[in-house]
Image (cartoon, rainbow, N blue to C red; front, side, top):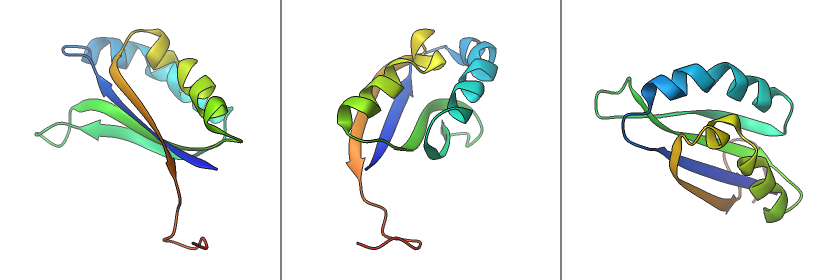
Length: 94
């Protein structure tokens, strides 16, 4: 099952995000991430959060994945939402 993990950064956390980014990217390479990237602020360049789409057996696996993300362990996120997701476009059946 696919899960969308939507994370919002705490205020004034850009430096911590940059410091933790290498560990975060390394973590993602070892997990079933379909695609991921930063949410951007009004200036369309400053990261203010993250969105990830992961393929997990169930919600508890998605929660465990999110809980161990180095960004989350570093206290970067103010809010984390995990939502089941069904990809329709492109190429998957409904």
